[in-house]
Length: 210
Image (cartoon, rainbow, N blue to C red; front, side, top):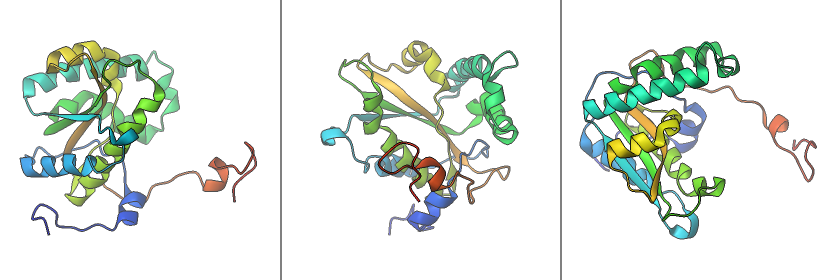
């Protein structure tokens, strides 16, 4: 067994207990664990096995601070006191998401999932070749006692973020994943979701699939 993999989580247990984690300890993460998580991510399928994913590991505090400033500006525009977005978030989610917006730079490591698109126009279908890899990454975090969450607020300042990180024109960012050990304010556990018969239909829209 790989020495970095210790808990051997059951896959279904991981899926049913996965949560967005936004609070992290100030504790260094070994490079070999981040390497393993990226490897886990690349086991996801992609269109035509094109494997268009690229992953940028960010540890430099100055870079994180600059991007964190843009992230916070984007948060304020989307969910600040003058926005409508605030009304659409549960209070618990609002509290943790607001905390992350103000403290994302303190996460020990960021992994920015990127998509190489060779200059093609952006479209929704493109995500099918990157977000399965991101989900693999998130599930992999649980194996090592780490937490993370998909964030995309930085995309409002995509041009500036790409310049700061030297990302080429034919590549776009898909998610910024802050990674860290859980600090106790949040933990994994059963999640509340709408039941299948409320969100799945059979043969025609609106006919519940029971």
